Length: 378
Image (cartoon, rainbow, N blue to C red; front, side, top):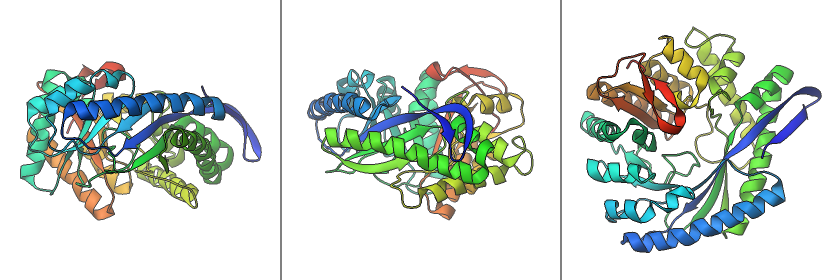
């Protein structure tokens, strides 16, 4: 269900919709046995789906995705966990939280193959750790490139990061939290055309109110604490974050001047957040595999992975959903570059790359529900 705003601010604008992208239950339950965790999660998923149905009737809005994020699985046997949770993953997207780089490639493949999400923890910005992360991602992608869309590297090494965005979403042991996210680039672009940066800021706050109402209703239904809305500007195919940023900057990526558009949108998010309950990244996101316009720019050969990594310095949330050649040293270097921006900004960031052996820039790779994505040069 979508909410249509036919009037925004003081002037009428073309009717443009936005969606509540996800409502996520961060379930701080821990267990040493896979079956024990599966039993607890089964009850939580059932209660969450009931709460979403009730909240959707109350608020008049249903989230696109329903998600459950767990803390680190700790000593749980991961292949057993993958088998135990595989059925539940068809009812709600499940993140098993953070994994150390000592995880075996077979365990990581088992989790991804079961439809589960996870983040690899870069505890220090060293070549040794970055290469280990690159090798694990490449191993998963070698089985099926689409499996690597379920694994990211948390370059900040921050435990229990609370965001509705996968794969970095986690939970805090002993706590139950509910968060929400939005899909609204086109809605914001219409507001910008109508009211400039002020209109953009007001539209962000407007959308926050809808997502918050839904998340609060769900939190009440599952006896959890409402933690906030991640106001990140995240795309879904034709609803393009890149399109919004290019409109605000007035130039095409990667021409000089594009980065100011990134910064202006992030400043609008920051301004709108004043006095609101927010959580997570709250930044522009440019995931290649999820943005049709960004896919086109990559296909044109104008953008490489290094450029996207450097944009992180202007407060873009990581290098995301980019298919690259399986150059492990190059991938490790990208991870370290984003880790450097994370340290400079003192913000949690993630890297999600899909290495494909033998792929060349300009090739197309099937990423399942994300469709075909172009290979980007490192």
